[in-house]
Image (cartoon, rainbow, N blue to C red):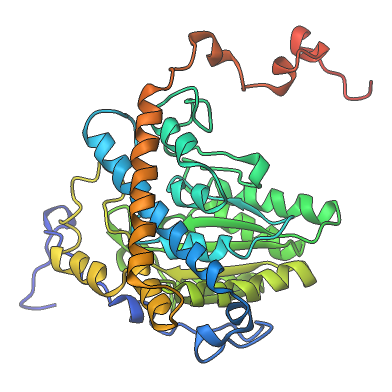
Length: 390
C-alpha cells in the first residue's frame, strides 16, 4: 500500500508471546454435539468424582506430589552432571497424567511422547527404576538404554515414552486395534503435545481411528508452546485444536486441565465411549509447563515472560488447586499434607542415591533387547531365518 513498506521476514524481530490466560486459552472451548453426555456444572459433582473416597483423594494428591518432587530432584541431578541427554520435565502438568490414569481399568493402555516421567509414575512405576533410567544405569526401567524419553512398563500397560514427535500416535492406534481385534473392553490413551498435531502421522491415525471405529483416546496436552513457538504462531485453527476431529467425524472435547476433578469427569465420557461403543475421541486439555521444553531450552524466558510463568505458578498450580479441595472438603489437614510432601521429597532423594550407586550396563548388553528372537535363542534368532508358514 502507498506510504508503507514491508520488512523482509528475515529482518523481523520476534516479540515475546502474550498468550491468553489458561482459563480462556480456547477461543470457544465447547463440547462436540456427538458427545454422549454433558459435563456437570461443577466437575466435583460428576458421578465419577462423587464416588471417590477420602483415601483415594489423598492418593491423588500423593501421586501428584511424587511427580513434582521426582522432577525437581531429577533437574537438580542433571544440573549436577549426574545424567546426560535430554530431560523433559512435567512440572505444572501433573493433574493431566494423574487425573486420566486414575480412571484406567484392566484392559486400558497408555502410550505417550518424550515428556513421559509423570505418566510412568502415574501408572505405578517406582521412582528408583525411573531415576536410574535417567542416570543410564542397568537398574533403570529400560536397563539404562532409553533415558528420559523412553520409559516402558509393559506389565503396567505402559508402552512408552517416544522421542519422535507424533511417532506414538499410530502406535496408540495399533494398541486400540489390538483391543478390538481381541474383543477386550478397553481403550488406548495416547498423549501428545500441541506441537504434534500438525504431523502427518497424527492425521493418518485420526483417519483410521474413525474409519475402523477404534477405542483410542488421543489426548493433546496443550501447554501453549510447541517447543518455543506459541500455538497461535504454529497452528491454524478456528476455535481449538481438538475441533480438527470433526473432519474425521470423530467426537472431541476441549477443557482446562488444572483441576483433577475436571480431568476425570471429561476423560470418563471419552473412556465410556471407547469401552461401550468402540469409538475414538480427541481430547484437548489446556495445561502449562513451568520449565522449558527441555533442560536444553535456553530461551525459556524469551518466548514467554517471567510474569507469565510466575502467574501460572501462582494461580494455576494443579497441586495447590487439589490441596484446596482436600482442605475445603476436610479430607485432610495441613499437617497430613505436609507429611505427604516430606515423604515424597525423601523418596525422590533416595531414588537419586539408588541411581547413583547402581551399576552401569555391561557393554555386551547393547546387543540385548533388540530382537525378541535373538534374546530367546529361537532358531530364527540363531540363523537369521524365519518362515511364517512353518
